[in-house]
Length: 485
Image (cartoon, rainbow, N blue to C red; front, side, top):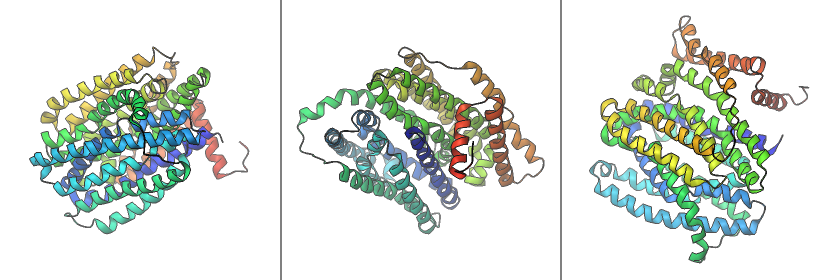
């Protein structure tokens, strides 16, 4: 198995656990602490994540690209990682001061002061997580194994520490501790591989400032319509609306992370190929990524549209059923984010064209801010979801326009149309099964099985999709090594 396939396999496991375990805990916790409790934790976490994104200054993206260029040289890697860690740490100190001032000055935020003070630990632990280093060197095996162990322990802990409505603080504590443990383990592991030196001259750091500025601008802009919608919903509506929106967003992220799994694996490969002027391999990887997004996005969209009620009932319970419409609105985000990641993170970023990605995201940010102020007061969580979709559409179109200036995109429009048409029947599977048995767990289970079987048959035998055929062969080889394919 090639390194890309191995990393993709590990990243699929990582992506699944990244959503599966939180969904298991959310499914349990949502029934215990109610939509208001979920909304409170989600609002606090969004504020903390926003501070983490700003203090990271774009290092999680910039670091992957720079590490990928020199991944064979331990001396240069030690120097680079020391410099980026130092920049990240001092930026975090400054942002934490601003964070504390904002919390103490805002009456709405100050009401949950204990949550936000605990959030400082979440913000600082992010400095030492160093996920960009592992992604840059392509060590997805370590990331996967570490994440799997930590999340299993965290998930088990939820059932002991969150047992009644008043224990939403314990739930947030577990979120913080998970990140802290990841930071400790990662830093310890990397410190065995590299020699950190924190006595660095300012002149050695400033060479990173300009590229970080463009990526940072993009990161902040992305965070505005990824995280700020939750924060704005908390201020313009209430915690219950935040709870509904957060639950719908949590479920919609399952396919988004799966579709994005290949992208994370390809970014180091793309950076390395472009750095070595291997345009043939670069174009091949981009075309493969485009086909991958198309292959999985349409079936996912029609599946979510068909079973949105059942997904909410299974993962959150009847008290979150109002989030069903929000989930339907967000179903299309998997396709939009898939494409915008290709055009932005996989084309513009490895090429060093960060300013064009920044401009694309800035257009989405302006759209998001404008529409959120209009739609949230009118439609609350559904207004935030609609704004999310429109903003992602703007970013996708803009990044496509700029990417097309630097690379000849070979998009198979016939394949897109055929994939779309073949995916439409998936929407009706749940309707058919509901006439046989109206139990929501039965409908979700049998619809999932039917969709997987139908999808596989269509992709392998009708569309002859090489991506699915390759994945099928890899799975068969893993399960039955002696079988001849």
